[in-house]
Image (cartoon, each protein chain N blue to C red):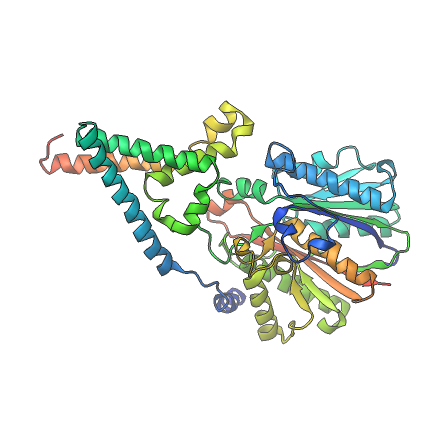
Length: 330
Length: 148
């Protein structure tokens, strides 16, 4: 389902990140970096909540708006009961919607916000996403200190929180259109190879977006996927070329491979992941380029693996979803 | 279904390269080293503290468990595993490591709902199937005419 917008602009963005992201190549574009994974709290979950608060605070300072003037807050993260968003956004805004789209939450939030604004229901809306490497490890994988070797195809959940204020007020970045994704199941079930699980979702959403809008891939200056990682990226390029004759080579990149230096930071294996991974790259570096008119049209496809350890053990496949949003510098 | 086969075919050509054989060789030697040091400890305890071999074996295990738990708590056991691969995870050190790391994860949830109920998250399977296997092999040994 593709929707076009006339009057939705990105007012301001704020990104905060953890120590690993600080060592990555994009560090100078982030608003705030923490050196400690605990962020001064005593547990990882509380640390993630603090990251959300810190990002919202930075956003409100940058946009010069106080918390009572934000009409709606939309938040999403990976924790059970999306607690980082619900606790982290407490007290901000006049309404809250919690969303879960796994790592696609960032774009899902933007799409919901854009629809609210375009429909004239609210004047501005703040979207926030977060993830924390260790709180995700604890919830989805092994205990944090457990040192089981991981395969090279595994991805590394990014630490940080990224928020974005959308409004009707005209700014230099416009939300042009969006495509809401469908859940896809290509029979994948390797939790250590999320790129392979999520690439089918991108294939589906990207294809539908291009069909609905009647555009070719070279319409966009940059097409970005959220967190496919090194191998998922290769799969996507190869599949699109082989099956649909769509060549993604030149103007395509993956945020998971951009956030870290894959040669220097071996710990991240195939690249970054998590809701905040794509958001950290797009809200900081990409928007920086767009504001300076270096690139004009960007299609951001956030990918999410709708993964539950319980159902995986019950021999179910891992489903994936991907939402797309098209941004335009004006 | 056709779509899945085609996708799998393309995805298989972009698989990550895993160094399984190299890992196995490293694990063989590091695991062997753990065994060698353990045997050395048993000999040491037997000679110096005039212990029986059985008692010395138990003490060796206790020493290993202590070292593994302490290094997990101090945060460098996982780094050692990334060097030594599974050579450190298969012996008793890995068992102690799994229990300590699970407990550390849940220490903020308190001693009952946190540490107590989550300590055996990873190690529980090892214990239950270890006991079951011991019972089973004991039974075979008894049926084959061995003593109890």
